[in-house]
Picture 1: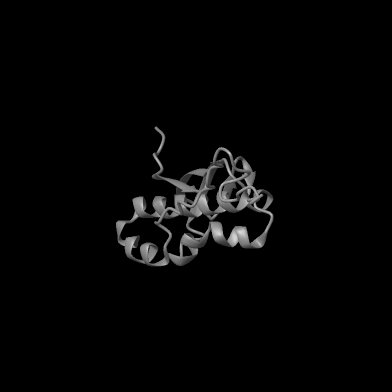
Picture 2: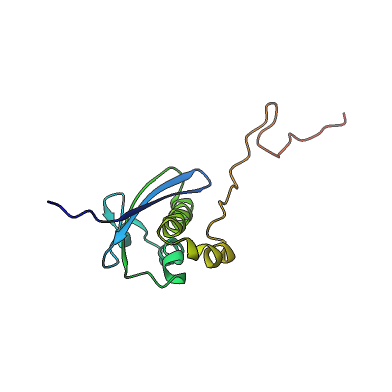
Length: 132
């Protein structure tokens, strides 16, 4: 008979990135797209950004994180992972809502690229106006 381990799930989004985050009790191992956390996120700022909710709630070494991230660039993916971890923590313990909300980790950053308009070279740019 196998013992069931509690797993918590959270979907995080930022720009065009989507992160599916699975969290379970463990020793602090973080796996992103079947790679180690340090190999996937090269810059130190991205590593710090991605695990901010764990640092805030003092759970950095209490949980193992498995994340599948698609779309966007590295910065968007790190932000999506942060959002997903915050939602998974909320599923684990609803009392964490206040500190996570205050830090802004539960708010989805909805800024996306504005679409290009027809008859123009870009989203906002216009062709040069000629009077004559």
